Amino acid sequence: MLRAAAGIAVIFLAACATVPPPIPETTVPPADWAARTAALAAVQDWTLNGRVALHNGHDAWSAGLHWTQRRDAYRVSLYGPLGQGVVQMDGDGSGGVLRLADDKTFKSSNMEDLLYRELGWHIPVDGLRFWARGLPVPDAPTHYAFDAQGRLVWLEQFGWHVAYLRYTRVDRLALPQRVDITRRKLSVKLVVDQWDVTPR
Image 1 (cartoon, helix red, strand yellow):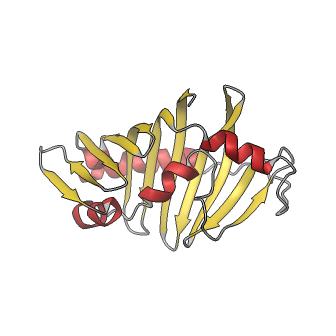
Image 2: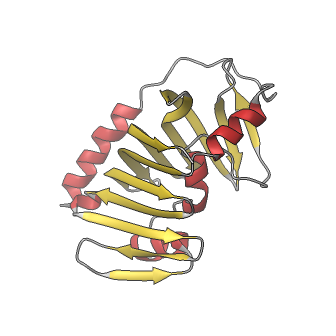
Image 3: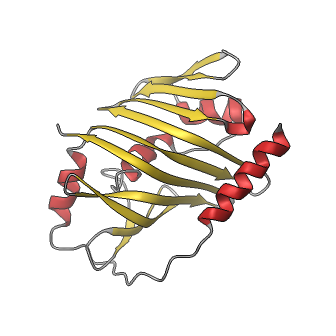
């Protein structure tokens, strides 16, 4: 089972390994950056469907992804990690619940610690709901660069490097379609197949 899952992950990672052409970039925020971030921050109810792959330098995993966000509350379902069924995460600002394919349930006030303890995945849960929309986490030290269209090319926060390799247009917004998130030997690759954005 583990070998089959690793094979799927290798195929997924190989498909993501295509190097895009260099993007001219600048570290100077565009004139409308405040308006852009306000428009993206106003999108607090959204759903995405896609795929995610993780690599920690030794092992690789991949899964289908369904993510629903309603203000601070979220439900993230991962389909097929390690060849299993569904791993589901439900949480908000006060903590979260992790449900595994064998119906085991775990609770914690810190979802990142819970994922690492139970699955060995160190995933920046709190940052992801901002980074997935192409936003820095508010009120946190940030380094970033922009392309000629004023979109983020990359940002760095909390020791994580978030690279935006592709965007798509959704309701007049430029939303990320391919995001690579790395820190040390850990990498998280996110590919969004579909966004569903509900205005505030």
